[in-house]
Image 1 (tube, rainbow, N blue to C red):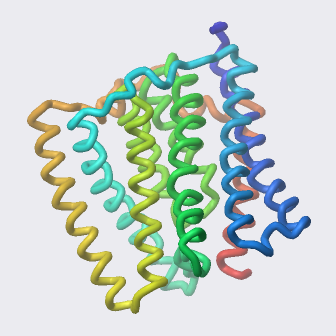
Image 2 (cartoon, helix red, strand yellow):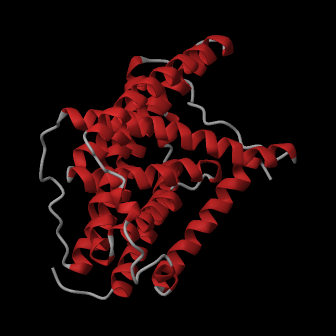
Length: 302
């Protein structure tokens, strides 16, 4: 791998982020123009391919421009400790979601409320399977390959803490819904820490998958049962996750598994200010802000 200054690498990451946004924005428009959305199952397959392409092409761009070929698959074997990590982080994900809801409360008092995430009607087993793969499997695999496999590894030479926070910020900007910023940023930090601790991208993929699958099941239950039953199921699931998370956290503490250690790294000479010194990254972040504003106006029907 060639040695490039941090500004060059951030420019490349900014270019990859722009490619990601272009694919995620305009390829679905092409599908709409040719009428693929008339068949919902076909539309889900098309959108799955779009999601995969929107991560693979930026990853290829990074590797080409930086002569960077990280060995992301080093330890394919899973250990019992990895399952403990997943449950502990799932408990923390729930905490991030609660914090995000609390932050949005003042807006709701002002009459600004974002619609909850919902699934489109599912009327067949095939649609259910495709929807599950679309929401849970594809993002877990391809977003991890791009964000943790490429971006995080590319920034590691400039400090683990910087790499974790910067990659989590980029991960957050890739998700354009304002109401999910706190949970997504927190998830980005934990996924990066888990990946660095285990040196196994399959563990971060598993954590990503479990979180997305949990969200899918919650939304599916809201669609299929009445509000009281859905709330009861959600409360039971959250209680189980918290209980298993506490047990797992105690286990990890006794084993001195410091998977959050990168966050305690002493502040180095690289900080998030470096992002503003990269012109391409600044353009990419501005493009993200435009996409975020467009999504916000759509959610609020302004």
